[in-house]
Image 1 (spheres, rainbow, N blue to C red):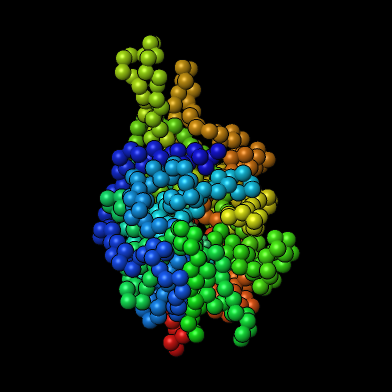
Image 2: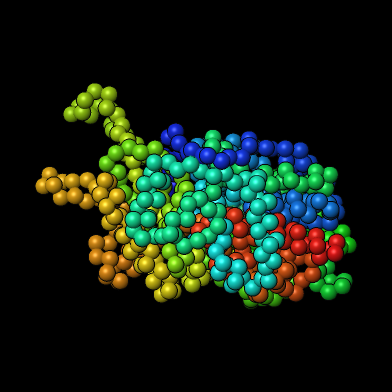
Length: 539
Ligand SMILES: Cc1cc2nc3c(=O)[nH]c(=O)nc-3n(C[C@H](O)[C@H](O)[C@H](O)COP(=O)(O)OP(=O)(O)OC[C@H]3O[C@@H](n4cnc5c(N)ncnc54)[C@H](O)[C@@H]3O)c2cc1C
């Protein structure tokens, strides 16, 4: 319900002339990557490459571009290229696609978790980075410390920069975002960190992958950095399973994928080649299970041949619950996407967007003046998230095309505690002096907020009441992760434990969500691991 509300808000946000002002921006959209993109049905039914990348998404694109500098690379992406859906290429068009029904082909794949929460996955070249809200922000230090990886932080910095020079712009704040900034600082969310792509406690303006004219620069543009002689990108190529060989210990040797006509193709890897799964937090554990890698009892119950028993595949699935409130404003303000974030000490983050909600009036309603058919209202939405989620769930197959996923939102008391802290901070924000401007009065002069949906709890000191509010209004922040965790499914080089020549490099390896928003770190990971692989192979 709350997810539909946000979709609705986004719809109206982008339907109206969005005014996003930028002071530093990157050049025009560059789709020169199209010269090495082709539909899977035009590819031979058998081919060999040095590297096969499954999933041309947020991590897959930078990884492919990096590996192509020295080796032949095939990217297999189940979705189409973004030019087939011009709406994903602009901030304004995004909402049309967001509200489209899922016809099995469009860039948004809808799913509902067993918790009953509606959610979305990317199904397009560029993955989630082509359908998201575009806020760009790097990971917090705790992410690196607790990830189980010995990071080379100089290489991490360079990998972030490699991404940022191509896809990130600096936004100039809209009126609502400026007001929100003031409100955060007034409520004590300090210090004021100005514009910063880095994580930090306090109030901060982040980057955006939308430029000054609202054009999206998703991960797909990182493919432009590839060596075109070495890269082939197949769209409408759905990988069905990974093929293994036992000749020299268990090892991945190829993949079977189908084109949109259902014809099967086989691609194999060369002697020192590898297969890398970058199919996202739902797609990667799903494909491992489909290929016979996962809990033996689960695979056997579905009569799937067990290639390798690993009870952790598909486990520790987490989604960051979204909490907050929507308030009807007593004036119209230009709609804007997220540009500013307030971060509290325990990695609790609060963002806001403004949008316009037009309400239609039935035309022949005689009491109204002629031609009064609609009224526009502005809304302010406060949306909060916490990075560390203790409530986890799982992903499993049930014989159908898509897996079943459960996140068990707020089932762990620590998450309820974090949510309560976040909601109380939203309460502090709405109680600032600056927010007095958006209160409306009744006939007796009593002032208050006009909430759309559930109002914030009146008594914020009542822990149970605020906790109940969290549970009642919980929805997704779309930052789901887990399923192939480091140390459980992959080692500290992202290699699948127990299988040679197979890695997983995407959000499924995360045990906590990086920073306020994960896209920056998922892209960085693709570049970082690509460079490490080149180093390991070339010396
Ligand atoms: C609505 C929405 C708004 C968001 N807003 C933001 C934001 O503002 N800022 C931010 O930082 N993050 C945001 N996110 C989150 C962010 O976009 C994702 O966390 C990130 O893009 C995930 O990257 P990934 O590489 O793990 O997966 P993806 O980018 O989803 O890549 C996986 C790719 O693999 C493909 N694939 C899957 N299975 C197969 C298969 N069997 N064969 C072939 N291909 C396959 C998929 O089609 C997809 O293209 C948002 C997400 C959503 C959904």
